[in-house]
Picture 1 (spheres, helix red, strand yellow):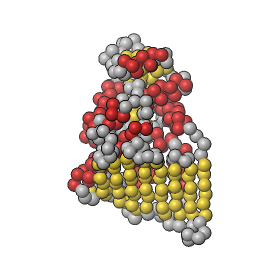
Picture 2 (cartoon, one colour):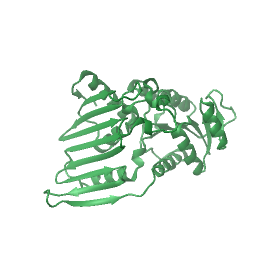
Picture 3 (cartoon, helix red, strand yellow):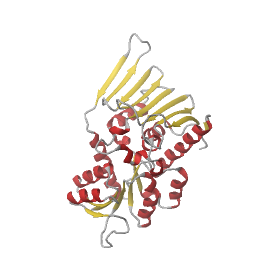
Picture 4 (cartoon, one colour):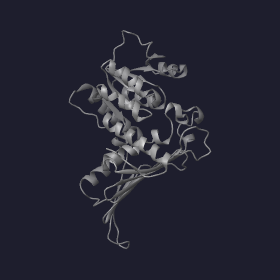
Length: 328
């Protein structure tokens, strides 16, 4: 089985390594000669553009790991060739361009919002589905990490995340938590948000996003940033007589059940997994998606399009500095 990987940056290398370990032969496309040299050293076939692909090369699927500005164009290229697609998040840079894919066979797209494969989130979702958190009325989703720490082997100024035109910035790249909010609670009724550049990082993108989402009898807060040290990544959900905290860094989920401060009851679950285990499980599912017609992606293109829709609402709310109704 051959998969074509477009983009051999950090996540492209990770997917190539994991797919190889799962028995998939990888073909690599990247515009940077240094990356192609490294890919060659790992035994992959390499090409410096999609146009230079050998016409005799065959592949069953396309894995898109390029900067977000290229995602829609490359997705259309793959769909025109009737290929199933693993599409890294975000699926594009704005809702309008992503929406054009709806006229194509978008059901062939599997989107890589990898937190959906995280065992802590899976456990949290089971608690909620089983009613352990009764009548949730408030939740907070927070993720932040200093951009210099993301890829310490390279100058962060050269990283696509520092470049607005390539689809960088906190809102697009950390939209994982937007997807999780939709997965748990659905589409909100209204949103109030701020998207800003506030740190001393030498970038032209947003590095801070604060958003509030109003549902029926529920308020959800979300904070994303590119300057936080130490790194934080957690979800907290508060309900009637109970709450749950999912701390992804400490790998601990804590459920607190109590009617008084003096007598809290706690269920603490400690997880043992490596970060790459999540990516391996995701790729196992993608291989199943490629091989079998009746297998559906855990994160569909339509879900990812909902994320892009909320991204647009956050941008608009930030500009008008006002609550904005979400038209479903």
